[in-house]
Structure formats: structure tokens, C-alpha cells
Amino acid sequence: MLIKSSDSLDAVFQTLKHELHRGALDSKHPFRFMTLATGAGQNLSARYVVLRKVDEDLNFYFFSDLRTDKIKALRSNPGTALVFYHPNKRVQIRVKGEAVLHHGNDVAKGFWTRIQGDAQNAYQPIYAPGAIISHPEAAYHWEGKFQDHYFAVIQIIPKHMDLLQLNGQTHIRVGFEKTGKDWQINWLAP
Image (cartoon, rainbow, N blue to C red; front, side, top):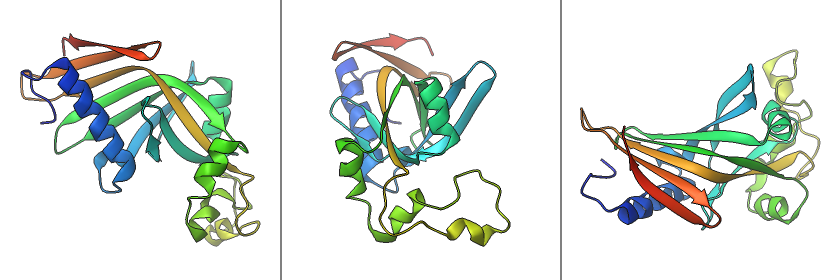
């Protein structure tokens, strides 16, 4: 278990922040991969993305090719949700927030310089993600070395978070609501 009913709300919040930061730093942590939900109305979509950074304000950062459907969806509707799940600790974290796209600015350039060598190729294929190709190998043609013109960083600014600790018949749930720079934290019925 990640949290117990005897924990203080402040201790729960510190544990939440610690685990989210670990997800961004430790490639083996279950929070390294999160589900991103986008869309509006009937045009909804969800996919896994890799958590790259969590800053002190609990903003979440991940990377994308600028030509993806998720970028189009976030440009149309920046409202989004993230879901994290830790199977060993049996805890789910849901985040609702707003996406900010970084492309060609200092934020994107700062992340780009930290991507190691050939890993940069993931953000510069000739064919856009989802394009029809003649055979799988066609996807492995790149425009050139170390070009960042399709590289984007998505920042999710959280507005609401919800932690659900599964525990038999005594689940524990905590809600986190952001007001300005502060978080209001409450126990919730599971």
C-alpha cells in the first residue's frame, strides 16, 4: 500500500509527490508510463505516454512528434486527463488538467538537448505518425540527424488530482484541488 487511513493529509500529499517524481526519474517505476486521455464529445482517445519530468508545481511533461493526433486533439481542446497505476501498491492516481504545447521554445530546446543520440530519431521520421506506409521498414527513414522541427514537449498543468488506494473493502480516496498555487486536500468516499 502507498497510503494508510492513519496518514495525515499532508503526509499523503508528500507521498503522492514523491512517487510522481520517482516515476519521471526511474525508468522501472510504474508511474513512468501514464495514460493520456484527450478529445471532446464523441472524439475521445487514450494512449500511453512516457513521463519525462514532474516539476515542483506538479506540472507533468512528456514528448511527442508535432504531427500526431494527440497534438491535434490538444490544440483543439487543451483539457486532458492522466491516469497512473501502481500494481504492486494497488494505487491509482487520476489527474485533470490543461495542456500547454512547447515547440521551438526554450522549454522544448532544453529537453531536446538532453535526448541522447539516436533516440532523437523518434521525433524526426519522414512519415508522420499514423501515415500509411508500404512496409514496416519504411517507418525507419529520417530526415536527417538531430533536427528538432517535429519535436514537441507537452506540459500538463494539473487542476485536480485523485488518489485511490485499493484495499479490499476499505479503499482510501483523497482529492487534491488546486487553487492558485495551493492545493486543497480532502478525504473522499471511495
